[in-house]
Image 1 (tube, rainbow, N blue to C red):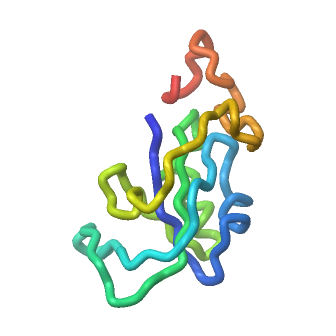
Image 2 (tube, rainbow, N blue to C red):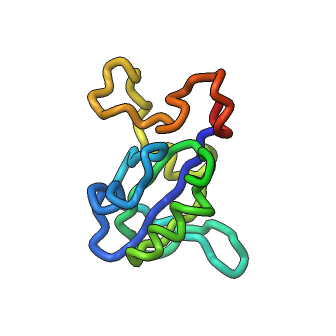
Image 3 (cartoon, rainbow, N blue to C red):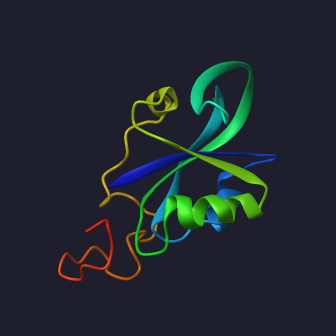
Length: 125
């Protein structure tokens, strides 16, 4: 199952975020947003300012999970990571994904099973 997250931080860039990600997650968009999550109530709301953000997507595999690995790792770089779903308003700003055959990025599937359904090594299979 694909998971999505918004990453925030000072002087944030897609390149800076990508350095912290394992191979099963990737940067899909960067831009500005006026949506923020209240950490106390865990509710998203619009705020009167805009932040630079990066949106990531991926699938959990073994220990390479969004909450268990990626969020703490990004935190070590002074970046905050909040999980979102497809209904979040920022997802409407992201253009449709291209066909993987046309994508010139390297293979970002699980580095253990590479999508082999007989491997049974991760949740993404």
